[in-house]
Image 1 (cartoon, rainbow, N blue to C red):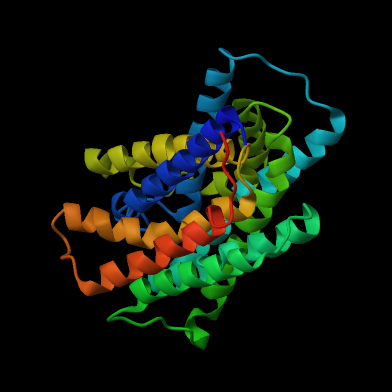
Image 2 (cartoon, rainbow, N blue to C red):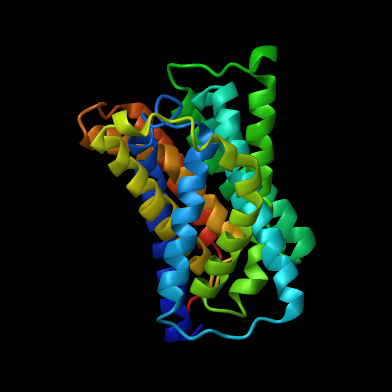
Length: 302
């Protein structure tokens, strides 16, 4: 492996780590927005409209490569699975189930990515990947469940189903977008993915825009919305997809196990939690799992 390739891989890992730090912070920032101030699909409209506008604006300052007609179909599919179905199912599902249930179901994403990547990208299912995903899942679920419990009952069935569809959709998106990231600049891909996502989201969400009481929404809530649009949507999506230029979807998805750990670390910094052996044990499992998926057996030569 040349020094240049090694450097690109390191940057790819740093990018996906940064994206998951943003997602970890988002658990705290976005907590008070829905449903008290915005219905889920109104929040989604803000995210998608804001991100689409930003990506088109930024794209003006970069080269605009010609996209082949065949790739527009893949972009349209990415917009459906990665933006519209992914976000609608997550927020609507969260309204019908518990955050704990949602967190547990979401740790299945790397397993789904591993399967999708094997069949669609011919990405080999290796022993190290299986060990790493198993360790990471163990650490994440242990951290989520310690001291509390999920509620996988008939009352939360529909919400749990929506979250599972969300997880499957996101996993499929990571695999689907990989070939595009190898052909075009990330900003070009994100511009078109969000454009198609907006086309899908508007018809099923625009009618709800009149529901919020905009005059009485506090400034802090608007700042939370700004964070969700700029950081959680624009920057995190960009970093995640940029990483796919140099690492596989399976490796990218393995970092999702960091999210409950990072959310706990944010709570610790904010003084809302205390460090216990739970966090330490979970961190050991998670980081060991990410190591097995990402680096174990990797040959690095200058």
